[in-house]
Image 1: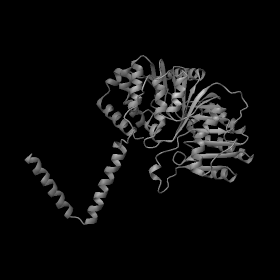
Image 2: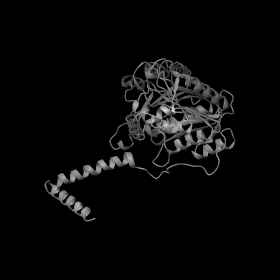
Image 3: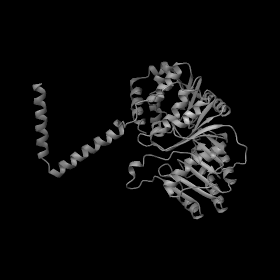
Image 4: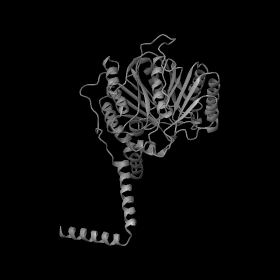
Length: 448
């Protein structure tokens, strides 16, 4: 104890002598700098907030094809349980770009367009002339560009579009006084025509999404064309951010039609447009509850995987209890190597519990969906990472339709044929340097 007191006394004496060697303002700036650095480190890596460490239910979770589950899911995330409409799966750019352009050409009143990334290139050159043409024909075109994801958009062509009468806005640009919210991006996919036809999924306007996933330069992705009440609900994901960016509050029959030409279907769905606050985050619960309901099968495709306590626990628990849990992730062609290394740090725990993990080989897998028991599916913009759960603006649909779920399950199995299954023994024996690299990437990925 005496030795410790002596050491501390010497330390204070050294600090005091060091401080007297500098002017007061130099000392003040040094202290401010140290406090600032420690505060940033604390905010990025140690801030916990008041959210619970994990979630649990007060009783058994109903099966996804029960009458109770859709109601419970809707109330849990404060969304409506709706009915009607149709869904069409569009595979890769060769599938969704032509369908998108055809729907634009059929537009009569409005085109509302919001995606995360818009880059100059061939894909942009296909879309902008059609939007310009429709605006000149009297269709009101609105485009919402994300302030970060669309930083490489062709400004000159958008100026021409605006000059024709179209409305173009940017969401959360880097503006002085708003920098603390700049990292929270608009990652939603909401493209709606006349309030009656809509598109959502993983697509962006970039040449990486062209083609048919035939090479590493052409990504594997999916979009979903929805109609009727589903499209009208998808409009919500556009309308609120449009109002906050442009000031224009969209109302009326052209935005939210009450009548549809096609007969109404009996498909039930829950659509959520999440805008996370520090402690109010509906998207994690929206993604978690269907997984908790799985009784036989849980197939998940996602480009970015960062497991939190809830996600890892439900995946391990379901696999351990006999549910066929399969996770399909990108392989070596991912656009961010660190994200892949971070995801790989979870492999050993997942494989040990019985989760089957696959890496898609031909190109970057950007598909985002999961299927539960071939009875329901979840589609939309979120990834299974920290940003989608906690930070970014996202939208997703839980669709209670066995036909769609079976189609997605078949597509998933077909993509598995182009994927490499991961081996538990290999992951258990990987060398310490690889383990360290994956662990470091995992820690960094949890902040992204």
